[in-house]
Amino acid sequence: MLSWVTVLVGLASTVVIVVDHFVLRYRQPVKIMEIVWPATALYFGPAGVLAYRRWGRPQSPRWLERHGAQPKTSRHAVTIIETLHCATHCVLGAIIATVVVFGLSLEMFDKRLWPEFIGDYVAAVLVGFAFRYSTEVDSGGRRARAAARRFLKGDLLSVTVFEVALLGWLALMELAVFHETLPPGDPVFWLIVQIGMIIGFLAAWWPTQWLIGRGAKGELLGAP
Image 1 (tube, rainbow, N blue to C red):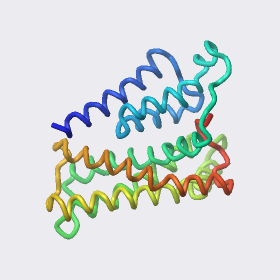
Image 2: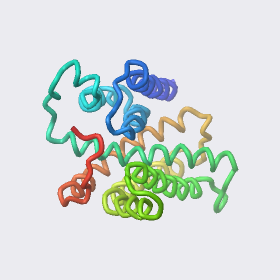
Image 3: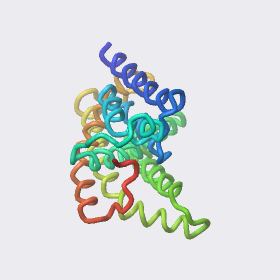
Image 4: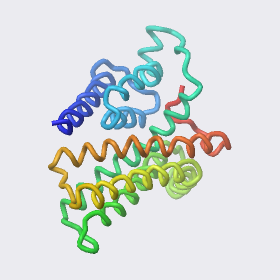
């Protein structure tokens, strides 16, 4: 019952943000953030909605037309938003890998845990590269090289730390608690993933803050 509640609350929170973007027309100036904020609500639930309303919605031209200057923000706002940005790579990567691994019944050493780990990380890296690629203004090979350089410099460390924390949590749950692979059709599976995402976010906070401090993240996407 708890698993069903958390899954449904996460989905409802995501719908709230999507409606705000596309029905109420509080569009984000950085279009990638229209993926980041709904993805954040999937695992943070109402806390993700509150973060969006505090830092995301005031970025929209519609909000600025109605209220003028943006509200004051916490000194941690940039770090939080950049960590959420990298976390979205991992959220989408986990969803993609889960569909592929369980859809194709992939196994390694008689377990689906290991191909899922590999798939999660590879998919997260590819999503991160795609995000960076979409923001580049060049074309062709120059665009791909610039996107790869920006991702390696500004995102790879945070994504890697997030994935290590997430996958370590999933391994602990499967090997030490449940002693079996839970299928994606079981809501407990998604509750565990949601908790793992929050753990991953907390783990990736400090690497992201360090990258911002040393100037590795030259373009702070969607930050106030």
